[in-house]
Amino acid sequence: MAKFIFKSTGHYLGFITIDGNILSRDGIYLGWIEEEDGKHYAWDAEGQFRGTLKEIDENRCYILKNIYSISPVPRKPKSMPSTPAIPAPPPNISPTPLPIGIRDAF
Amino acid sequence: MIDCSRVITQIKPSIGVVFALNEKNEIISKGSGFVFYQEGIMVTCNHVIEKSSTVKIQFSDKKDVYLDATVTIQDREHDLALLKFDDKTRKPIPKGNKDIVKEGMPVIVSGYPFNMRDLTIHQGILSAIVEDATGNELYLIDGTINAGNSGCPLLTESGEVIGVVNAGRRESFKTLEKVDEMKTGAVSLYGVDLIEIYQALIRNLQLGIGYAVPYFYIPEPKTKNNKEESSDNKDFKV
Image 1 (tube, each protein chain N blue to C red):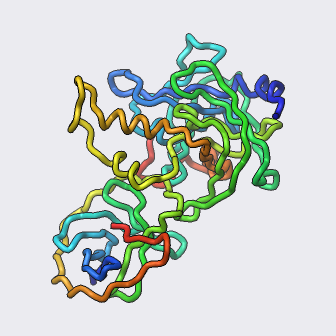
Image 2: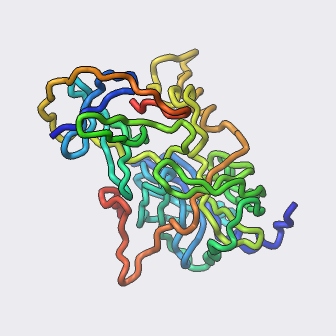
Image 3: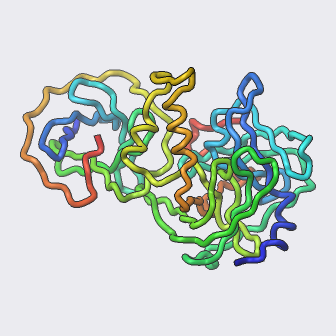
């Protein structure tokens, strides 16, 4: 089942597929999620580090970047293996205030 | 100020220029590297060699000789690579240990910045021991780090390796990131690509802070029980 990602403004950004790919609400490939030591990191399609996945529940995730953190070495770019079914977009949610130095990754 | 003269005499034969060449035998990238672990094994940064078809090594005491090198291990996560080359006369630089690495300690950087073929030596201090966003440790160096220094050793004042300098990393600024992501070929002035110029300027910004990857991330060379491999097997390259 896909996980829905929202921006801190509450706008629906897209979803994460079961195999960890990040897609926009229109099904455009944005990148992928990698798990490391229990944390989930987001990389964009070009392999650049974008941020950390914050999962409030399976219907509400954010991908956030600490602007004061040092970006890791870019990964090898990945392309989307196949286009999955695009879930019906959920309604936007209430905005969430972000701490200082944290911003939406996408 | 550290007197590096004794150290530089010892390490000079073991630090080389690394050239990455394309299929047409043109140089597409250049960095530094140093003999480590054993004779015939050189450490460099993965970004120096990752787009190469072939790799050559040159040492400052034999500028007319380009040695063939083979990429044996690529560690993309830490931006490190091991090269194998055929010259057993060059001795590995000794490894430091974690106990001697302290913030504020004096450090030496020795490599081949820009297009230089002569080994340069710089000194600075280890400004900070930090972690990147995924938890990998990094050393920040207050010293002169320029393009071409990538892959050169970060040394203690007694000449032990404590890290691998990475000139490709830099502080990220939102505006600069955008320029870095721009596609080249869109804007030109008198036939010169402006985006390429901006990107080159950013790459060569001298902010006085450099990065080095701690030595303990350097992958070990092949032994009977330790087959050569990449941290990401898809990156495996022979």
